[in-house]
Image (tube, rainbow over all chains, first blue to last red; front, side, top):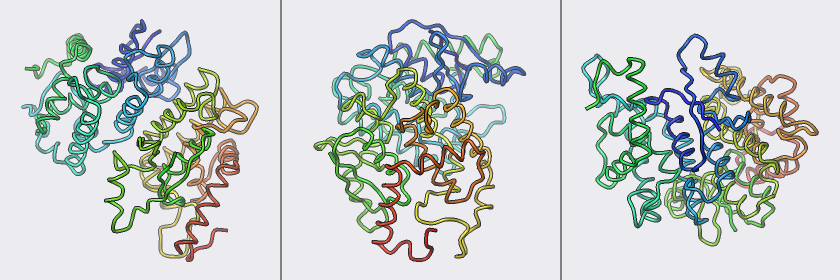
Length: 228
Length: 228
């Protein structure tokens, strides 16, 4: 099995798909497809039925979309860490994952994920204050925190994640959001901050972020601004 | 089991959720929650953890988001008509459903679903030509048709739907799109038109549309412009 991924520091869906593939416990390799090179479009068309990454390549059968990948891997590895074992908790995890999947367009456009830099920076880009206050963004930042709070209130006892001690696909879906809040120094309520910190400290997430730094160094991308 | 729905003529997610609930084969009742009344917000907050409709109420356990509802019902009724029986076809159906779930924002904003009227109309609203040509909309109309074509080319043999003879949750996800194309007289490629026609002729879809007309008549909403 092979996961075709984009730039680790900026591709949020790649990050989610990789985390979920790891939660499946199944063995897989990664191939990077750089999206900004002359042959990118042609290569992407070859491997991605929808033009989206990541793509899960399972012996030549191609699956795109992180939710579809999650369900495909769940069928291959039922009872893995992708979803909770309890049926109602599993439905709640799918609700949380689905809201992230379809929502927060303003926030995602204003605050692109960047795992190797932090704002404000001194290179002419807009300050984080301007970005965070763009139309629609404050309300979406509030809604993300409400979704975390609501889910944790019902399911989060016994641990720091949405469903308690175990990090699952719903947390994976929100990991890029937690990273955005850190990158752009978004002020969160204490409970939301504690959750975001827990997500960004999870071993799978730190492994991914270290990979993003390594990848950015390889291509000389993070030379301008060092990550503290 | 109970499905809390919005206005049948305009609530696309309600239409999708209802179609999928019917595909499960499970018995359920419907309650309408009107979203534009003085007490709507308070009532919605009582029944919907995310503020979204439809809501599936299963003995007091509430599930929102149509994809999460689809997976919940699929677990209650595995092997039902929600998803295809073949594992790869099922993954492809989830891919198609997931793309509809997260995409086509420009098209959805420009061409709101309206099951009881058609454009252009003579009441001062913009003509369908203006709506269809808004920024981003033509490309999304093309992509919807490509998604249908690609899915049918691989899986559609033996019938008019995305996966052949059986109408499943992926078709249900795209049913409001087919209705928009008819309402606004969007010109489609012949294969896409044939698919859209098949969806809008499916017995479950026609039953829903008849319900939308009945509901609109009850509240006096469709008095101004008759549906041809």
